[in-house]
Image (tube, rainbow, N blue to C red; front, side, top):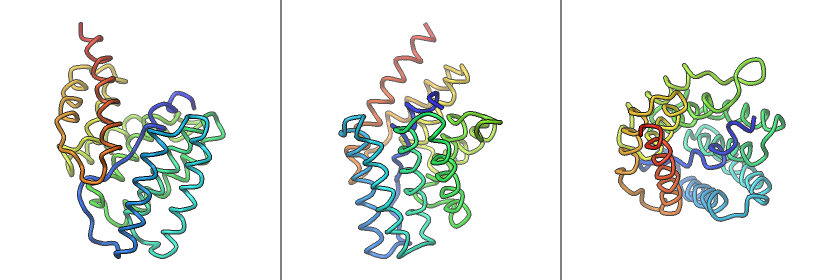
Length: 216
């Protein structure tokens, strides 16, 4: 389980395009979830993150109580559960990632295009980081399928290119990984997501250094 810990705790802070399906209150709650997620993920001491993410899941559940079919909120519930799992680590996190998967699949069934295909990116990243059978549901073939579907919707996005590049480098496909990282770093800034973008770009830069060392 620890094999997927590092990336999941840094993971899945997606939103690229504005969404108009939510009510005004739903939009406000979505922004609060996104902002708080970035604060926990990038500014909160590591030992405090698990508890903080657990509280944020409760906040996401409250938002969904008002709009239970909102794919945007379902996606973010999945994202928060995933990062809580990463903060928790170990086999005890498996229940959380399975719950995250279910939330993301529900969002995907409602609207695959929601938040620029973020459900595909989130699911793809889980599939390649979670252990495979018999421990978990990890599956590299499904991971690549999900990640390429995300890129078909949002080809220039920071997050889909970043996670696809990480998948590729784990497959030792370093040239492809470098190309995806270069696209990630060239992505446009997301309004209102400054902290998340800064953190993700730092991760992409660090990963690019690792990939380039493999190509030397």
